[in-house]
Image 1 (cartoon, rainbow, N blue to C red):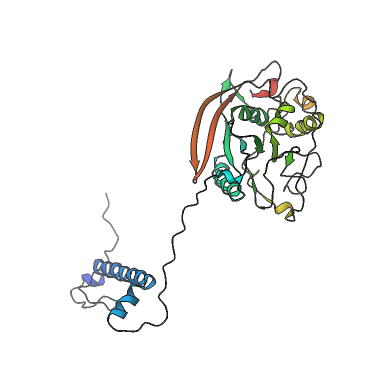
Image 2: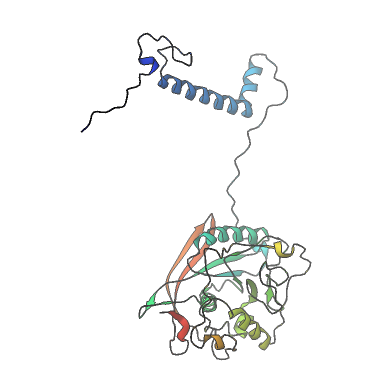
Length: 333
């Protein structure tokens, strides 16, 4: 609507009286020509680097009767993709790694490749089961996370080719390869012992990473299904271990202390569900003598074999059943 008051600036090479660009380049040398020249120089540099490290330059020089100083350099090889195949020489036992899971994809992307490499280097035959609790609503209420019931379901769904399990948190990565993940023949083996776990140090703690033979897990009748929300299911399972007359074993000779594991959980942005609803505050300290592996109710919506960073795993999408009359704290209203 109003005439522009901005003054048009004349570029130096638009002035017919100017024979040179301020940089000293001839007038006919455009930006396009400079760009093409840079590309050509870059290509020639890369070609020279490839020829020199592969020995082609040296061979060409020798063909012309010229001497080249020193031996020819070999190009650094590209690292081969890490691939592990199980071998029967690794032993007769096979581990089912049971990973309770819900909406922690960043941690899962790190966990599966790390554990597959870690166990393969130790020559532990294994398979990783991601036990994904499917979100669903019941009468407008969201079911809370139930780690113990997922482990019970994962135990029942794991292959018959496995004869022992690892109850394994997705946010806890072993770093010390001296840690033992072998078959726990004499009793449950608590890998993430209180002396090594970065957060939990009380003597009855059995969470994080716990190995059991399938026979011993059945002897305990698995874990209680009454623990909806975060925490306390491990403490109740400690009592089951003792009640079954089993001896608990822990690592010895590990000198890395609290740096034995890498803990991925960030509480600043991923809050734990620590609410205690209705009678849950009193129930969390009670031993569940009726429920467990024999009473877990669930449905596998789907099963998928996946590769995460080259590491194989099986994802089980599990829908847990909640008896509101028995555990009214199983949902968020």
